[in-house]
Amino acid sequence: METKAFQAESKKLLDMMIHSIYTHKEIFLRELISNASDAIDKLYFKSLTDDSVGMSKEDFAIRIDVDKDARTITVSDNGIGMTAEELENDLGTIAASGSLGFKTDNQLGDDQQIIGQFGVGFYSAFMVAKRVTVYTRAFGSDKAYKWQSEGVEGYTIEETQKDDVGTRIVLELMDDTDDEGYSEFLEPYRIQGLVKRYSDYIRFPIKMEMTHRQLKEGTTDEYEETTTLDTLNSMVPLWRKNRSELTDDDYNSFYQEKFVDYMPPMAYKHVRNEGMPCYDALLYIPSKAPFDYYTREFEKGLQLYSNGVLIMDKCADLLPDYYSFVRGLVDSEDLSLNISREMLQHDRQLKAIARSIEKTIKSELVHMIKTDRDKYEKFFEAFGTQLKYGVYSDYGMHKEELQDLLLFESSRGEKPITLQEYVDAMPEGQKEIYYASGASREAVAALPQTEAVLAKGYEILYFTTPVDEFAAKQMMTYKEKAFKSVTESDLDLSTEEEKKALEEKQTESKDLLAEMGKALEGKVERVVLSSRLKSHAVCLTSEGDLTLEMQQVLNAMPTDKKVQAKLVMEVNPEHPVFARLQTLAGTEKVAKYAKLLYDQALLLEGMPIEDPAEFSELICELM
Image 1 (cartoon, rainbow, N blue to C red):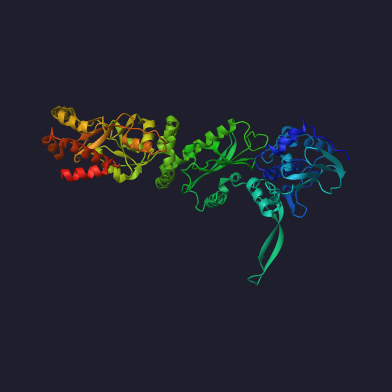
Image 2: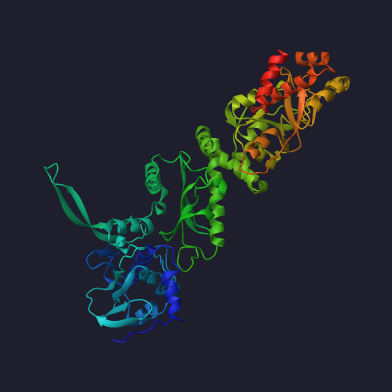
């Protein structure tokens, strides 16, 4: 029998097909099942107009058989089969695709979905097989043919006997090596897992004989084995069913099984987009953040399907980072895949789908804020920090998208509020959005810098996560109201009369304040009298964009580069401590009081003091 060479440019091309195109060897089963599904689709399409087919949709199936002794895997279908000419053209010519030609020549409806496009998938079998044999008989023909190849050396075609229409592909697996264990594909549970992973939604049943072990009736320790022909795939994807026939339990159970979560999702959305691009999607918000969510190890992404066949397990391009908490899947017929069907050939379709999904997520979150505030607060507790990082990242590019989704604690009460709610409650005359940063709600509420703002009847947002203030700096304004930290040195809440009185006191005490400033040289820019303090003796404020809280966050990062905020120490001129300082002007005790007050201000900010021993000695001495 003559061995024919492959009709491609060179043996090197086939070698590349076998060894370079696919990332994982297990993909071979997905490709063979997809080809079998295509063959059935062609005959099913023909049956719609040709009664001689004599088969209904329920008669079609794909079968997988494993023979451990012979080390073979057989994939069979009762589809349209191939003629000798088609064997020559489709299997003898690398990268020819009968499916693509069929798809082009026929106008298929929604119920006829041809998966294959490139004709390369068949050759993935050579990643695991040392010999591939194809038995096929075309519909309408009384002749059957056998195609056989051991790879790059070529192939043979001869007539053979086959009683039924369709194709049977037999893979003789390679021997195991130290690096590769091909025998794993002879285990039924492995085949079952691959079908479930990649081909669960092929719309024709994929069947395989499975052995089940169970207790003998009436015994407690005797087992018996039974063999049944099981259907391995679900066939109809949940996302292609009508929403009206599905319940919350259906969606929740699918999520928990598919994404291995012991808790039902907090929320879900079933999307069917029939425009351009056309896609179906199931989007879920988990009840809790995964344990590794805020680590570098976490991988975002939605599962990506093409006509029900899994292409990518986590397609990161479908989600922006700030919505990375969303889990789910997308299935589209409009994707242009690369030759291995593992990656996209063009990204414009994917970008269009991603934009659409982003709008859907935003819409759902806004709806949750308005209709189920308690649920949204639970969501924000789990994932709100990611939204804030989204505001801060990319130089604030996404602030318009995200700012209305943010929640902050505030001086108003225990419930967090939105920025819109803050603005709506602003009294007449308030021009800025005030905030204060700290490790906790209690720590922020205790800051001395808040006293003057609260005395004016203004609400203060409590920034209690490290990213809060950085996000506010990127937003700059909300509804034309600027964000203003209560610790900024230029906080202006005084009347003209109050300002004038403070300036007079400042002038009167300039020598004392200069003495204190000299004692704190290198720590603060200067020491001034304060108009913001009411009951406290001292506080620290900052000049410029970098606040003391931002300095703490940045310096906690693993980098050698440290930053220094420009600090100002403010002293309450009405406090008894200042009166005592005035009596000590010109003495060495002024410097000691200045250092003690500086350490006190640091403690109020929740920061460690620089020299605890000196601090202790000063307290003892000055007491």
